[in-house]
Length: 313
Image (cartoon, rainbow, N blue to C red):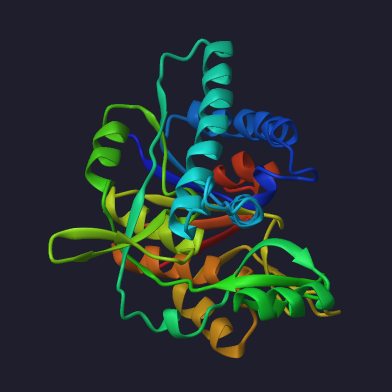
């Protein structure tokens, strides 16, 4: 019997739960690895993606602050590659440790992943993806004057830099990722949405942007022919009327029903909306596919149908 294939999209809370130090993030990933291995034990073929918003923003800030003729600042696509390699390395180590602890004969590999985008995507005209740390309004005014960067106020928590967030149209490494998963390996890829690139006259060119991790995860799930897209975030369920007296958790919902909630504006942009849209796109991409949205803590329960929001055709 062929094992079902699952793409697990890890939210930022799986990596950074407080401090931004390497040791603190590695400690968070130890807990994450222990949760993920329980899904592997259920017999699924597993590919893992992850976010990188805080990390890539901090790397970019380090580049800007050290910019000089001796250490010139690297562009955003290269910073994205740095963060993807860094987080992939950390997660690779922690999953490897857990595999050995559980005497599981599997290999884990992290792949720096290039994700193709359309250079004419309208997203380049209106930056919208927050990255990096929060700033005060005074700090933002100064940075905007000095660098021309775009900032937005983010949910009452402060101001953050925003960059373009184009939609993924392909993943350049998808064939090798699929082969590795076919052979029973655990693959970490498309970290932070992958490195945005486009083709021009035979060249591959990186662009200053950040692809949404959930859309990239959905594209990967399609390309490697996954059966399930599991999106792990900071809440146990998708809710309608969120934080209102009539708040309601969605348990099992059809594509048609959740589309009606999207049209009502039930889900916040840059938060739950891309997760729901990615889930809908995946379920519609092929009959029999399903998507699950829940928290990391209840990932195994969700796979057993006891928790989380399941989106079906």
